Length: 92
View 1 (cartoon, rainbow, N blue to C red):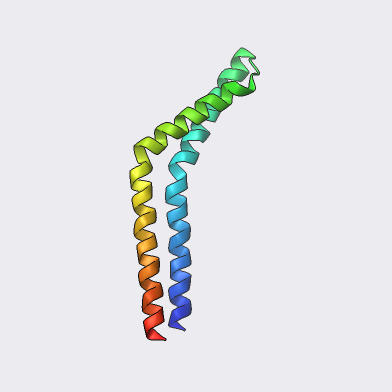
View 2: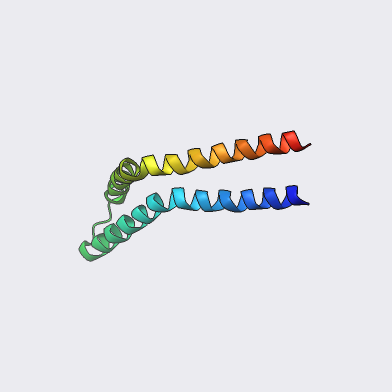
C-alpha cells in the first residue's frame, strides 16, 4: 500500500517538475506571440515568419537565462527517482 502511495507521490511531483520546467519557455512564447499578433493586426502585415522569428529568439534567451535552473530541477528529480527505485529494490 505504501509503495502505491510512494509512486503516486512521485507521479505528482513529476507533473509539477514538468510544469516548472516548461512554464518559462511557454509563457515567454505566449507573451511574444500575443504582442506580435497585436502588432500584425494593427499594421495589417500578415507575414508568417514575423511571428516565428521572435518566438525562436525569445525561446533561446529564456533557455540561456533559465536553462541551468531547469536542468538542476530535472537532475535533482532524476536523482530522487533513482534513490527511491533503489530503496524499493532493497525493501523487496
